[in-house]
Image (cartoon, rainbow, N blue to C red):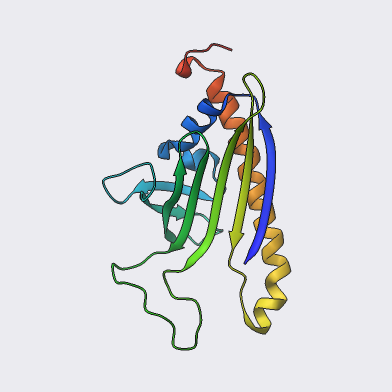
Length: 174
């Protein structure tokens, strides 16, 4: 698995940053390449919530499954992205490869307090690296693409949280 980690300070308290990030309706506003993020079950937040996520990658618009696998209020939200399944359980691969329902990517957002009215947002991403000769040849390109996407997502999320905090939606006026 490849790994990326970025941290930034956000001009909003942890509670505000977490509340904004926890709202599934805002995910397409800050997540790179995400055009739709719709709940698939009864739950739309918290551990175990599953979402149908539509991505925009050039002319390709795949729909993948995204599950919240770790959720601690005002501390951590972890998203696990998987290929879209048709409702069947994923069988093990006979060649020992990765099963169809295995994670493509795990995105962890951590929120830590940083003094009065500020927070630290840490974004960690673990992604599956392709195997084989072609995978090794393309791994650097994939790492660069993932790094760019994580960086864009993190900076857009920071901007959106600060804009959200500056409005009267949370009882404060800029």
